[in-house]
Length: 483
Image (cartoon, rainbow, N blue to C red):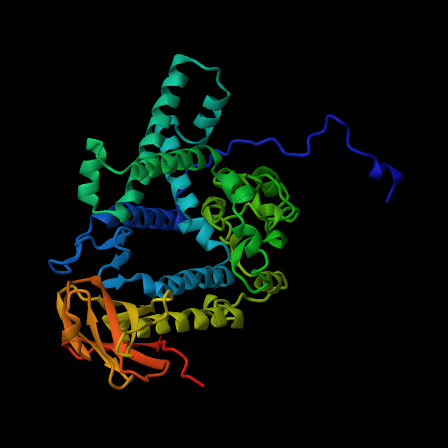
């Protein structure tokens, strides 16, 4: 190292690269068409799902997907999740995380390139740019042009479309938390809850800002996922790769025609850079700005076809296959690339969790019981020497129809019970209550045991007419026997 290498940078030097607006060029090809398909499917699901209806009977909402915070329920078609079943939601979140690991291990950052919400909305907003301002060159000229009435009108029109999309995005989100048609009427009539307006405002602002103006900066600087993914990729992972042994040294088409043996296949047309939504040059190697959308492959393949050279100068490939191909060997089939051990382990774990959730969902009971005993006082000693304990018992009917449920005592010989709506003289070891559809019925239950009964445990058991039952063990408190 020379001494001059250690000299500090000038005081005027910036530590940060100045942001350059990225204007991706329109391109057509298999990967671009796949991005169109993913964008249409994901946006269609997001905007359309709250309006789907699903008949669950007269006692449950008919919205297909609904997060009912008021009644603490989550509905997804035939599935209904109660608060005590949050492990289903936790399992789905774990599956989503492992699914990202699985995708990354197999095909790199394909999630970022196709299905990430930031990518989808950025892609949508970039199509708005092309619709209003034209393709890449026209947008670049307009950016450099001075402000005129025409430029201001174009900007106003484009930003208005941004705002409409952003507002519709925020509006669609709140539809998942209430009946969509009802909430829509209340929203426009000004009768919706304040939190609905606040949520729409926040999501409108963030979508407008992140999708309209920050775009690739979110992927490169704000999102932690690219940095996590770098630890999950290895030489066996499929990534978008520039095959430098084939493309270098670069030269224009005219130079290559004059000296075909002196230049590689890359004609330095920069089309791969022009179509990149994050503005990177894939020829510089793997980098954090690459979201693996593969639009550079479409652009390069088209150029290779036009100049009569084989496709695949930029392609999905593993580093191992690149070394093998550079040495003259044929690349492995894709199915072999996708079945290396780490990917199979991720797939196995993901599938096992999914199977466990399906089993738990298919075998769960629709009858539940929770018991909470009073702590103060823990017991009451009656005038005849008997001992009374008090409990809050909740009978849970998880079906969309009313059911008569029987509550009984298991254990604690000689004990009986009654509730606030019963006379103490009517105390019994079992009684029935009708529980409305899809609700939890709280009961204040008093259990009394004969004189001389010591402390111990017993259980409440609830049984429904269709044979489902549940029980909950609890403690019975009594005074210590005299010594």
